[in-house]
Length: 271
Image 1 (cartoon, rainbow, N blue to C red):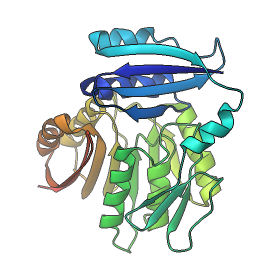
Image 2 (image 1 turned 90 degrees about the vertical axis):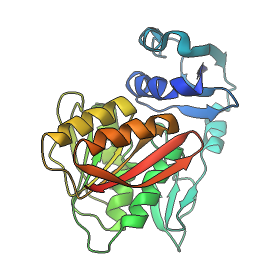
Image 3 (image 1 turned 90 degrees about the horizontal axis):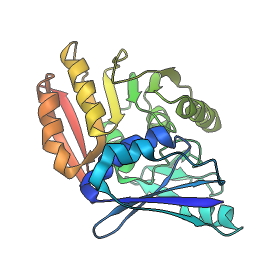
């Protein structure tokens, strides 16, 4: 088993993340250092993706690419890397090998199928916003770029219904379907390329996407009716102002901004 590590400067992390979501839809690790962000992909020799597209996209942004062989007990170590997380004292996101909690909503997401286990700051901030906006009356919700389905599943368990979830990657849609079944919730899943079209939106929308994709979403909303609530993340703090401006042009106003390390999340309401 090979561990392929890709390091980049923090300001290039958003671009690298967006490319890796296409090149490695089965998931990857993320680690932050003082002047770098490292993403790691695991696979057998000959099965790892060709990074030519990534290198072309980032140019001088890549600091280092390194391939190392991992020990035979890598699977157990991989499990050790993924821990459960209590978000807003309300939502317990865990891999299946950890126990549920009686005092929290249980969301079970096993890593390895698609991006999104709940551990990343952008996912945590989206769930925090969902908890904050939970009104107890349900209502429809759309999840754009669902990945593993963690946000859609958390929303369904918090009371939203129906929940529609969209992604461009078939592997992500399969993982979301499997995770929804494991969690006992129903999701309306469909494939969409957000660079080309925007699906019908529910009154509440959550979009944990890269900044370029969020700009496409803003352009699509500008051509239609804005949702009653939009929660977006996947942003570096340095990108937050420009994204806020993009959605302002689509008839939405920023109502709250969260930050965690280098990452940001913004909630919007109609202007």
